[in-house]
Image (cartoon, rainbow, N blue to C red; front, side):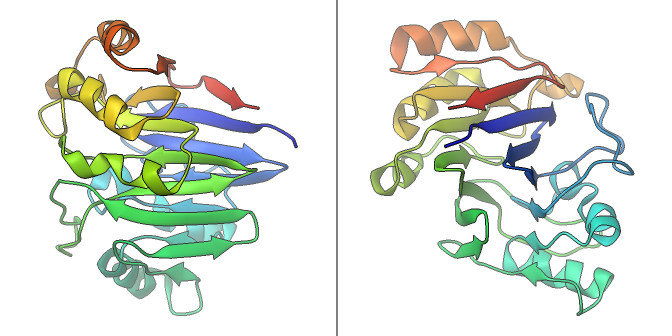
Amino acid sequence: MSSVAVNYLGHSAFSIEHDGTKVLVDPFLTGNPKATADAAEVEADAILVTHGHSDHLGDTAAIASRTGAPIATIVETAAELTDELGPEHVVHDPNLGGTVYFDWGWAQWVPAWHTSTTTRGTINTPAGIVLNIGGKTIYHLGDTALFSDLALPGQRHSIDLALIPIGGHYTMDRHDAVRAATLVGAPLVVPIHYNTFPPIETDAAAFAEAVAAEANATVVVLDPGQSLELK
């Protein structure tokens, strides 16, 4: 089985690749000071969105319009995107607990404790996304505070990689994120949603050290533009 490349585009944005398929998650590129990809050039075979805040929904509509990539996101945000892109564009609209199946794998939307309203005023429920591609299962926690149900996805699926916010202010901070890493139970963790803007500046190296001491996981700190290979 070929490997899965997890490419960090900055903030909470990723391009996850397997056998030529590119899945974008939370493609906030335009206006992102840490972005390492241009929204006018990035390719996508699918776009997954955790919630409708502008630093996550980001360039979804523009990229989908250019590439034709199907989108999947929580139902209220999906309805807004359908209104913007037209009914001919494929926009999947799961709610919490829902799973969308693709020819490359699947993605399930799971709870996250946060708030969300799009720039157009659509109130929507934030989520995390558990996705499976190339036989690997990745849990993108989205924007969330620490809560005990972060342990539940790992009771159903063996999580290979967790993408965990650590910046504080808008999400859990790096101290709560250590506990989150323990709850999720993935052997590999990548910190996200930090150092993009002053309110979420934090010390990723200190987070990695704390996880090594307190949780049974290895933290891989990726700079924007770097990748992690899951074999």
